[in-house]
Picture (spheres, rainbow, N blue to C red):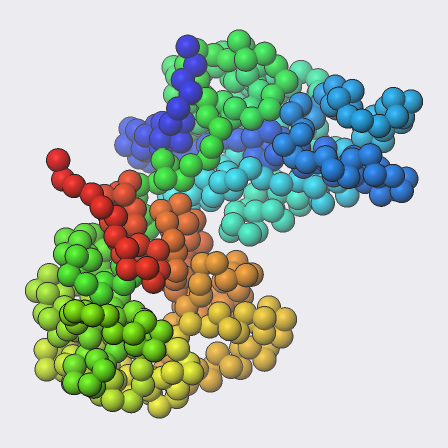
Amino acid sequence: MVKEKNWMKQLSLHYQKCRDLYPADRLMAVFDIDGTILDMRYMMLYVLRSYDQRHQTDFFKHLTIEDVTVHENQMADLLKTLVFPPTLRDEVMAWYVERRWSSHAIRESHRPFEGVMEVIRWFQMQPNTDVGLNTGRPETIRSDTLRSLNSLGNHYKVSFVNELLYMNSYGWDKSVHHSKQEGIRYFQNRGYRVFGFIDNEPENLLAVSECNPDGDVLLLHANTIFESKRKRLPSNSISGKTYDLTELIHEKTLPRHVQFVWHGVNDEVNLRQFVTSNVQWGEFDVRLDPMNAHVILRHDSFETTPLQEEEQFFLFEDALDSLLQFGKSIKLDLKEPGFLIENVLTLLRRRHVRSSDLWFNGQVDVLKQEGFRDLASAFPEAVIQCPIDFLTPMIIGVPEKAKETLALFHEWGVNRFSVGWETPGMHKLLNQLDEWNFDVNIYNVPDLESFLKAVLLQPKSITADFNFPKWHYFGRGSGQNWEHYEYSIR
C-alpha cells in the first residue's frame, strides 16, 4: 500500500536521519523535472493558444489550466474533448508536437508547481547538501533546460548547475526508466549519498527502487498528472501532491543568522506569550496617551481609532520591565516624532538598556532626519530602521537615483530598510538591496507558510505576528484587528 500523506514530513525526517547517520557525507535530493518541478499543463495551454494567435482563431481562448487533465504526451486525448472543427485536429496536433519543446516554448511557458522551488531552496541552503536533477529529457535540450530552470529559480534564489543535471542519453521517450537508474548511479559515483528521489511517474520510481536494495533512498511520488500506471508504484514509496513547507521545515532547524521579531506585543496576553517563546525580539507600537503624560502601547492613532470607552492603557515602562527580566531584546515602532522620542530615550536610559538590545523603526515622513539622528546618537549600536515600500518603483525603475536616496537615509543613521511581504515586486526589491549590501527586514508576514518562504530569502530579519498554531504560537492576529487565537491547554 502506497502511503498518501505527509510526504514532506517524511522527507524531512529521512533527511535528518541520514544527516545523523552520515554526518560527513555529501547528501543529495534528486528531482525529476517535468510533472514534478514543472506543471506541464502551462506548456500545453501555451502551445494551443499560440495556434490561435498564429491562425487568428479562438478555439482555445476559454481553455483553463483546470481543463487540462491529461499528461503532456496525451494531447490527442485532450483535443478529442474540445469543441473545434474535427478536421483540424491533425493540424493542431502537428503544431503541438513541433513546438512543445522549442526554445521559445521552454522559455515562455514553463511554470513550477506551488512550493516546489522553496523545497529545493531549503535543501540547497543545508550544509553539505545538494539537489540533483534526473530527467527523461534528452541531451539535445540541455542548454534550454538549464536556462529556463535558472530563470524560474532566480525568483526563489534557487540555482541549477550543469554537473548536477542528468539527462536521457537514449533520446526522446526512450528507455526512460533505465536512464533514471543511471542517473542515480551517476550522482552516487560523484560521491553523493542520495537520500530522496522525487518523480511523478510510477515506473520511474519502480526502476529506482530496483537499484535501492537497502532502502536508503526515500521514494516520493509527486501525485500530479502521470502517464504510467499507478499500480507500478513501489510499495515503499510515499505519495503526495502539495509541497508543504510547514511539514518540511521545523522551528529548531531555522537559520540562526536571521533575526526574528514578534510583532505587535501591545497587550499583556501577547507579552506573556512572547516572553516565554524562543523569539528574541519583540516589537512594540509606542505613542503618547491623549494627555501626553505617558508612553503607551497602541498600534492605531487616536484619530484613526478613537479612545474606546473603558480602554485601559498598557504602559511601555511596565512592558519594558518584563522584557528586561526575561532577557529579551526590544524593537520600538515609534508612531510620533519629537516629545515621544525624548520620553522613550529617557525611559531606556533610566533602565540602562544596552544599545545592542535596541531596535528603532519609524516612517521617514514621521521621524524625519532629526528623529533618526537623535536615535543613532543616543544608541549608536542599535538597529535604526525605516520602511521603504514607497521607494519600490524608483528602486526597480531608476535604481541609481534610489540608491542615492537610501544613502542619504544611511547618513541620517538608518542602518536597516524594511520591506512589506506583499509589496509588489518585493523579490526584485530584495535582490537589488542585497546587491547594494543593505540590511533588509521583511515585515507584515501573515502566516507560517509565508514566514518560511521569507526565511528562504534570507533577509537580515523577519517581523511577523507569530500566529503559528502549528508551532503553538498564538500571536496578535492579522494586523490591526486586535484579534487573538482562542485556545486552551488540555
